[in-house]
Amino acid sequence: MKQTILGAGGAIGTELANDFRLVSRNPKKINSDDELIRADLSDASQVEKSVEGSGIVYLMVGFEYNTALWQKMWVPLINNVINACLKHQSKLVFFDNVYAIGGDNVKHITENSQ
Image (cartoon, rainbow, N blue to C red):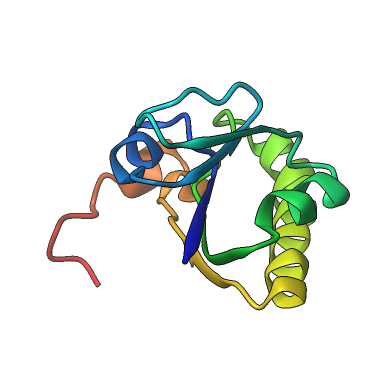
């Protein structure tokens, strides 16, 4: 089964990669048999092409930590990814973080937080 990492250049995407299709603005091989696709993930057609044929898709995109940018980019991106996964019957794994909560608002969060 083909698996795809969207946002493959980051720390988590790099570690996760093993016999994958790696998709990003500037993808780089991690393993000799990696398939590389250069794509603008804000473009729905490029997301769909990237997802096609994948049984599992990992969304690991890391936008710059900027509220205005996140408000502009996340909703269209997640819609594009979900629509592509539905069309191609791919499972979606979304790696999230707490950065959207904002700097000083996360100091109380520990490994025991729920």
